[in-house]
Length: 157
Image 1: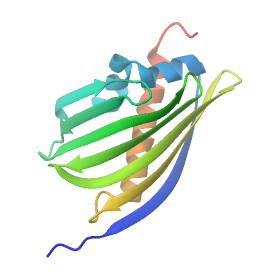
Image 2 (image 1 turned 180 degrees about the vertical axis):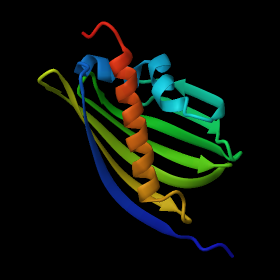
Image 3 (image 1 turned 90 degrees about the horizontal axis):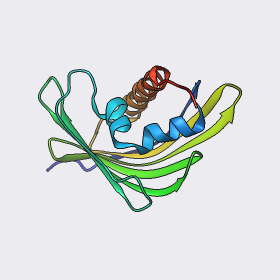
């Protein structure tokens, strides 16, 4: 019999970008922009991404890592305030086995010369899934990729 375990965690990550709140929000809301920084990770193949960015809308993303495992997430958007806030929940799986369920909040605040982003996630990890440290590391990497994508955009609004 498989042990049925859960581990709960909450973490926060903050970033300041030189892009406007409108640009940062668009990077989450526009399918091509989101796919670029979120779905197209180094070494991942067979990438699939679909985004319906609206309250009640969904996002699905999957890709095969270099070791061959298929990572997938299914997201539902619960609250969206243009240029200010995004609240979503998502379920992650590896090779169709669920590893976690999370609630995430992204807030955007204008600051001198750009935008301050705060990302807060509350998660439950199942049967020893990836765990809090790996998840926070994953989002740290993704938010850094977002910063790189934003710095490449021209012109700044």
